[in-house]
Amino acid sequence: MIAVKSDTPRKRRVLFLLTIPITLALGYVLLAWSKIMLENKIALLTPPREIVSEEDFIRWSSHPISKRISIEHNGEKITLLDIGTQRLFASGPTVYFFKEGKIYDWVFDYNDSKSEILGIDYSDRPFYKNQ
Image 1: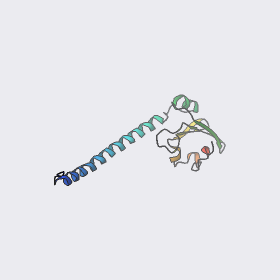
Image 2: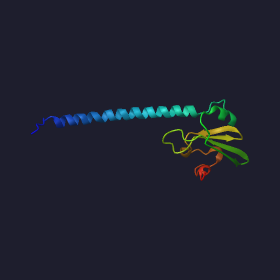
Image 3: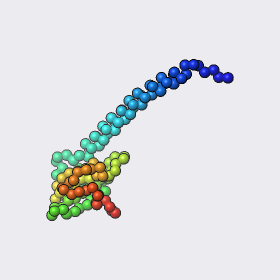
Image 4: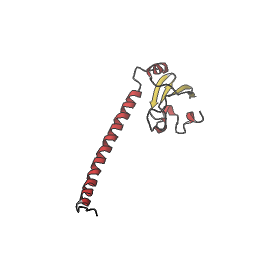
């Protein structure tokens, strides 16, 4: 027969109560680290002010362009350059928008973007259907 000390439930309770703050602290550290990594990634993908044209962007970008889409909207040529997803759980690619060959805007995650660039509603994502 194995003898069990009477203070075992108390040790378990203390261990359980210590586990909670340790788990919360580790979660906070991981969350802070992921936020810093995301901010660094966004900073690396943000084109500097010297990047004005599409050619400048292609020379500057270290990422291959996976899709290039040109449309005409209100008489203006709009080009979208897709460099693919740039994070593990991204719902869409990083896309750069050019208006008449000049950089206009960019979005880190195309599917999460709520902006309406150039007054075009991108909510239905027509550029990525069946392509």
